[in-house]
Length: 618
Image 1 (cartoon, rainbow, N blue to C red):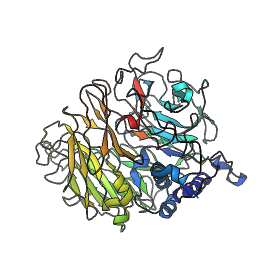
Image 2 (image 1 turned 90 degrees about the vertical axis):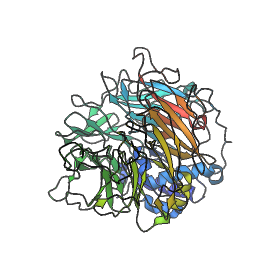
Image 3 (image 1 turned 180 degrees about the horizontal axis):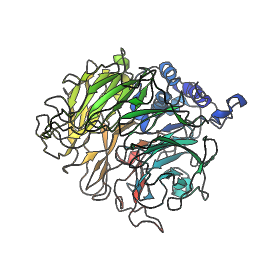
Image 4 (image 1 turned 135 degrees about the vertical axis):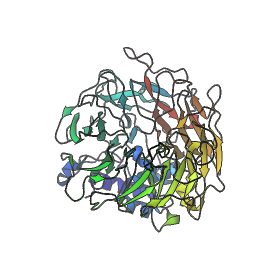
């Protein structure tokens, strides 16, 4: 049954999408006693790792709202773009829009994460209380941290984000509102991305050890603390109380997924409609957990007929990506480290996958090492309901080493109802290779993004953008950005454009983040290893080449030998007063453009949580 919280959001969002006035009902509303387990609700929405992996471009608002009853991500994504494209046309009269001042530095703020960071293909999660307005105290971003040492916080929430607002939030300083040490097992770490509840009051995540994996739901402080109050700090975190059901602020449930396999790469996907989570483990098993946020005790679904599902049984690498649930297709899509993409039936999967497509250069059974797998599928696929290709949903998978002869790194496009088989040159585009003859560059390809033209018209006129490597670049190669059009609704290299990102062999891009603010379409991404950059490119009918040499520029934030690239990037909406930002964590310790984030009593050179204004990178 759908939760009350999203029904309310859907009504309000529907008014927005259809151009109807929104009343002042964006404040908190209490549920009826019959729906007491659904708690309070408000017109807000989460933006996390999963937001980018389930898309419905170019559809009528009515169709998006209908799909949103199955998964609110469709509505969240469309509302963000609709607000950006015409807030003043869709909303009632309100205070005049204040221009966001262009920042005088390229770092708006940086907050110490001490010895913790978000891995390159993982994401923080942002919660916004109101879809059309900023809130200094109720809006927050949460970082789940892989902590390398110490007893510091590994789950950190920051509010008072909008230092460019007028007046500034907290006099221009972000605030660590809550910080928890959630470790329950020896050596436990958060290696994957957290997922927020639809009302922003809870967060789900996985704790991983060298041999086990554990699913947690933490109830956040309600309301979120405001300066000078806080629920723990990075250096002196709170320890959650243990609870069987996630109903009391500050308490955390713990569910053992298994004690024989860690989870190093599979973030939990929450199906909000059924209050169910899906998550993979490194031994190739996919698990189903319910309930999650609804107030009951989270439990594994385990039966002799269906769950858990044995997805990957390969010899070389069974590490699973995060799953992507496509309710429209009735399928779950998930990849593995060897190079396979799988579909799993949502209903009655019978403990096995429905189909297996060979995407990467998989292990072929030889003993001399010549058949060793490439870089596999390490990021979750993207599922798209494309109005220009309406017969079936489309799935896009990414690998650093394609099974297709003559192609190295690759993007492969498949119909959602694919059957067992292998990718081919007709549905795969090349992202560069070592010699130009289809061999691997030895590095990963992370998930790409679509431009605004795709959001408007799907594959009729849109493009996919992906970071790969220079063709014939050797091993390792240098990173290169690719801009692919579609022909007859299938991705194609014909008419592609590219730009080389830098000259550092072995540098790898983070997943790409795109956002259209109503006037300008922009691409944001981190790149680096021994060096480090965060770049932006303006998207038109091609990509502009960022300037990333020497001092920081309007399209590049640099931090040589320190930044190490970035985690995945989450974004703000285009809003009137302090919004339109990007957030990420650094991948190495130290300062960013000379700005340190260290605090008294902490590490001299910690990892940093960073916020930048989008307009500062254009």
